[in-house]
Each structure stands twice: as structure tokens, then as C-alpha cells.
Amino acid sequence: MIRTLLALAVVATTAAGAAAAVPREPTFSVAVSLKEAVEELGRRFMAGHPGVVLRYNFGSSGELQKQIEAGAPIDLFLSAAERQMDELERRGLMVAGSRRVFARNVLVAVKPLDSPLDLAKPADLLDARVRRVVVGNPKTVPAGQYAEQSLRALGIWDRLTGRLVYAENVRQALEYVARGEVDAGFVYASDLAARPGRVKEAFRPGADTYPPITYPVALLTGAREPALAEEFIRLLLSPEGQAVLTRFGFQPPAAAR
Amino acid sequence: MSGETLSALSLSLRVAVLATAINAAVGIPLAYALARRRFRGRAVVDLLVTLPLVLPPTVTGYYLIVLLGRRGWLGAPLYDATGWTIAFTWYAAVVAATVMALPLLVRTARAAIESVDRDLEKAAYTLGRSEWRTALEVTLPLARNGILAGLVLAFARALGEFGATLMLAGNIPGRTTTVPLAIYTAVQTGESGAALALVGILTALSCVVLVAAGRLGARAT
Image (cartoon, rainbow over all chains, first blue to last red; front, side):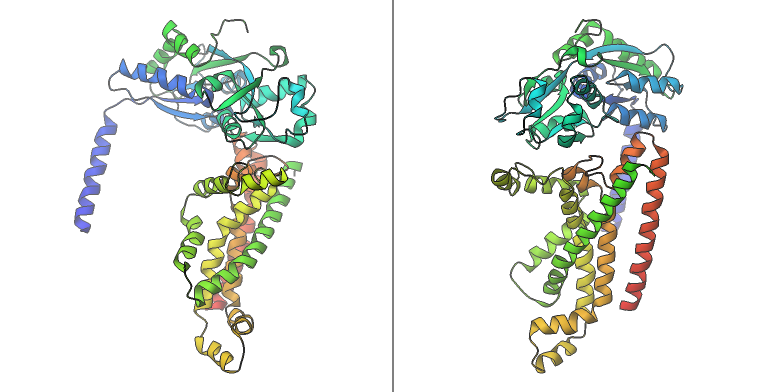
């Protein structure tokens, strides 16, 4: 019995080793708001590149930035904000000149599908029946940083602090709203498009209350598959890539808001 | 030390103390019942109490959300009746820590109670003591060190709880950010000074707890 198990284990590890040795596996750190769009583009990319398996590391841009600073073996970083990319550039972890903006996004306030509350404008969040509002943790989550900037510009951030709940990334914020754990939350327009029917749009804060939400991509100095990563950047910027991003609720980089 | 570090520390201590107190109130009778009583559903109770020890904390956290969330089995009626929900409050951190720590107390205390000489209990019965008084005056005092060791372990577990707490209580600075969550955020945001201070404090506390548990355990045998 034990001998059989040992034999099986040996066979399994050898098989796994052999399988892992064949494909090339570039690893991309991807802001979680891009998840579905990048997975779709990745499928197309892999279809055109036999023997290439893309590996994704999804998370909040701030979290991904820290992992890269700590030496994570990543080829490409797709961030939901410029700030995290600036920091990597300052530390010399980014290949100079490889940085491109490939998409834009818009901030949306959402509420649960069965919410009885009429939240049509930011001030409605101050209604006493709105007990909890989720935003991404502004320390690491760009969607939370934009939400904070917008709510500060609107003059209601300080009056909301007692009701705020922080999520570790924007999809967790969406999930809290979808599950009805909170009464409202701030996510991207693209999150609504990627997960239709999970939550209802409440309102869109004015575009003048927060900076433009641009998504930069850059090749990292630690890249082990730089050629493939650069090809993926070209796919992102190509008409095909832009069409997929538009389908998932993103706006083209040059478009006015 | 910054305000956020201090508030995390004081929250963690409050959560751990309260969770340990609840553990004592629930866990010691439970350990006694599992050790000395034969009742229907005993195996199921044993399984349920022990599960959090082997399940990933995120799974336990998920069950707690399903149970206590605003739309949860218990959470929904509570919310409908009172407009209050436990999720994202510091009570949620207490609940998570309590559930995660319970198996450590129950298993340790149960073993200690089972090792008490039954002849001593029988002697108490023949002297006319009820089971209730025998448990309080004979069994539990004899198992005292094992029970205390279990409480110390439960306290340490409650102090260090991360996964289930994050899921049920969230990570809200000043309200539900316990020391382990503060360490996580500090590392994520590159505040290595704050992370180091908290890591040091938690390590020192855990060492004290382990030494205390070790001494109690040694005296118990």
C-alpha cells in the first residue's frame, strides 16, 4: 500500500515537473478591476502563442506594488492608478519608456439590488438609514483613494467616517454591496459591466471631484519574459485589445470623460 | 507609537480578554460534558467545536458571514428586528476570535478532566454530593492546571486571529483593526516601522503565553 502510494507520488511529481518545464509562463500582476478583461485578452494571447501560459496575480494596485518592491518575479504590472506606477519608476523597478496608459475608468456609487433607499446624489449618503458605506482601503486601493478624493471634494467625507467600511480591493467592495452587508459603496463603472446584475448603480460622482482614473501598464526590470510581456502591451493598445476593454466597461485612454 | 498602533493593541487585548472569558463560560462546561457525559449528538458537538482548528480560518469566516451577516440565517432576523448587524463591528472580531479559540480550550480542558481519577468522583457521590457539586468541588479543581493551560492557549489564539476576523469584522482602522490586521496593512503599505513594532509586541506576548502554558501543563501532569 505504502509502496503504491510512494510510486504514485513519484509519478505525479515527475509528470508535474515535465509539464511545468515545457510552457513559458510570463506572470502579470493585474489590478483586480481588470480581471475579466485581462483574462479574456489572455485567452486570445495564449491562443496565438502555443506553449505560452500566462499567470495572473490579482490584487489591489497598492498590494501588487509592494509585492513587486519585495522582489516578486513579475513581468508586467497593470495598475489601476498612476501613483503605484510612479513609485515603482522612482525605485527603478520599471523598464524606462515601457509605460503606457491603456484605459480609463469612472467612479460609480452602487447599492444592493433590493435596496429600498433612493440614493440619487452624494448628499443622500448622509441619510440616517445609510448605516454603512464601503470604499476600498485608501491606503492600498486606488478605487478607495478616488472615492476619498471625490467625497472630500464634495465635503461629506468627514461626515461619513463613522459609516465607512474598508475593503481590501475594489471587488471586495462590490461583493459587500452585492451581499447587502452595506447600504452603498464605491466601485468602477467597469466593475458593474464585469458583474452585471450583482448591484444597482446609485449615482456617479462628478468627474471634477476626483482626478482622471487612468490605467498604466509597464514592463518590470525583473521580467523573465520581456518579449512576451511587450507583445501583451501591444495587444492592450491594439484595436482588438481596446474593443475588449470597451466591452468590459473601460474607456479608451485618449477619450474625454 | 502611533495612534493607530496603540488602538490596534488595545482592541486586540480587549478582543482576546473578552473571547477568553466567553470561552471559559462556554468551553469549560462543554469540555466537562464531552469528558464525563454520554448524550445524543455528542459526536456532532465534538466535531463542530473542533472544526475551526483544522479548517482554514477563511472557511470559518465564511460560515460566520453566512450565519451572522446582514442577510445571514441569524443575522437577517436580528437586522430586521433591531436594524443592527454584528458584521464590521468589534463584536464581530470577538465572535471570530471566540470560535477560533474554542477548540484549543475544549480539547485541552477535556483531556485534563478525563485524566481526573474517577474513584475520587465516586467517593464524592457516596458522600452524598450531587454531580453538580462534585464537578465544582472535585473534578474541575483537580483538572485546574489543564483548564488554565487551555485558557492561556485560547487567549493566544484569540490575540493572533486573522482570517476569520478579516472576513467578518473587516479591517477598519480604529474600529476593527486588530494587531494581526494592522501588521498586514502596515506591510502592504510599506510602513515597516509600525509593522516591526507590532510584530515584536505580538511575538513577545506569545512567548510569555507559551511559557505560562508550558509551566501549567508541566504541573498538570
